[in-house]
Length: 104
Image 1 (tube, rainbow, N blue to C red):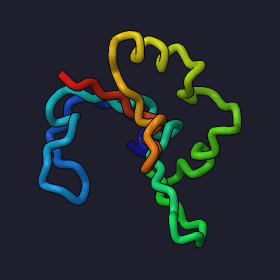
Image 2 (cartoon, rainbow, N blue to C red):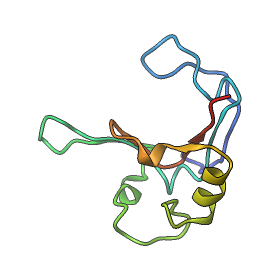
Image 3 (cartoon, one colour):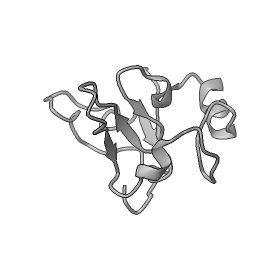
């Protein structure tokens, strides 16, 4: 991810579980992960959000405009949504801005 590689099939489990991920099932893709990080918001109030990949913290602020940002106005977002994918950027518990998945 630190190399900003777009990836799809990856046989792995969901972090912290024994369940196969959507990537392991061939139903998910991560696009430009460095510019579209995975963010878990700190709920304790101490401001220590978890952001991955390392070094992509500046791109967690989605109010800023920058190249390769996926948001609801982006063509990438619109095309995946048109084809029935859900976007990790719309999740409530965390934000996975790089992630699109489809349930067969």
